Amino acid sequence: MSAPVLWNYDLDDACYRVRLMASLAGVALTLRSVDAYPGAEHRGAEMMALNPLGRLPVLQDGALVLTQPEAMLCHLARTGPRGAGFLPQAPGPAALVQEWLAFAARDLGAAAAARMAAMLEGPGDPEVLRLSARDALRIVEDHLSAQTQRGDGFVAGAEASVADIALFPAFALSRDYGLDHDAFPALRLWARRIRALKGFVPMPGIPDYH
Amino acid sequence: MPDLPSQWTPVALVADLPVATSAGTVLQGAEVVIWRDSAGRVHAWEDRCPHRGMKLSFGFVRGDRIACLYHGWQYDGAGVCRYIPAHPELEVPASICVPAHAAAEALGMVWVAAAGTDPGSLPPGGAEPLRSLFVEAPLEVLVGLAQAGLPGAGAVTEARRDGALLHLSQGGTRIAAGMHPMGPGAAALHLVLPAGASEDRRLALVTAAAGLRRAAEAAAGTGEAA
Ligand code: FES
Image (cartoon, rainbow over all chains, first blue to last red; front, top):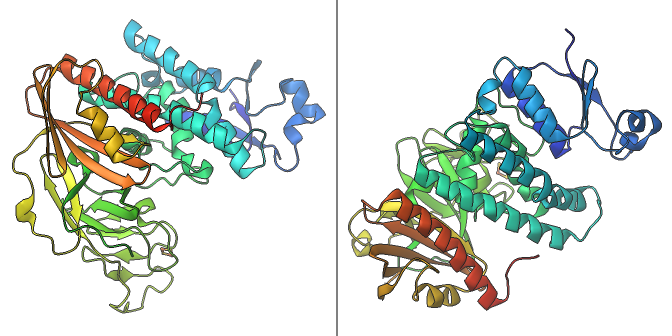
């Protein structure tokens, strides 16, 4: 079986989530670089045929084409030799994984938008987006503070799940959009636990030490 | 650099600064890096690398040194630069050093003060960590509300300020809050409990603290963006 193909832009936080999950799950990806900025190749004819949304990342595994990062994370966890632990099966943790995957996709979207606005002239008011991202990260901080009291180090339990990987870059890259880590001690320690996972890979702006 | 006060101020929970980690904080406008070396000692310095001014709190701890994220200069526990990766053979001049503050641990919190401050004035005893609460509101607004209790966490039977601590007895739980002024519009409370509070109670207090943050920011007009 040939390796799944990821249409990738290195500085994009959603592409990074997929590369990180693949590495943690032990899946080798074939990377196809897309010149998203400044080339806007992801909106060119070839990429639009693959993903009419005109967005990265795109993951192709055989006949399967995925355009939603959360679906990619779950697929890689399900198919990778080291992935099973990232998809807990018990009803409680499984529900929490769904909850935080949806939160990452919807409510934490402001973080990626804030970063694009701050770094790559993306649309939107950077300060409004920064405050929305702050509010969303505080919800994760409050949840992780509660998890600490339960003795759980990750959002859905004692082990890292796909939801943690979905949430991670929004916080790890927050300095890119003007949000310091100082006011998020629970997130800071959680990010450190993620960095320590076997197979962790960095991206520009996220060092692997700490 | 702005000098730290010569009274001790809590700036973090001990539990939030594990061995071989660093964190940035602000105390009355002064940026401070706190870090714990591999032997468990806590250090508090000016948060600025003498090389090009990068925040040392972005750096990483290696053994008994902290290394700057930018060009990797390494500083020992006394703040003296010991190694410059671009010039590995160089005997680094001892004049390259980071101004150090006093750092200590007491009541489950990390405290900082001006260098030379007497540790005898720190509160005695230990405590269990609850959480730190960072709020974009002046400390007096935050503490004024906190004295009436964490929202929804029971009746307040005592609220007493003692130096940098607020002692709160609420719903049968004795809470100590370390009061941390960060700047004109930002403050933190570092919350600890005596051992033995039930998990349900601790979870209720974690949630109630978030309610206090919302109330303080609403009062200060710095609340949620939405
Ligand atoms: S700024 Fe710290 S090593 Fe250069």
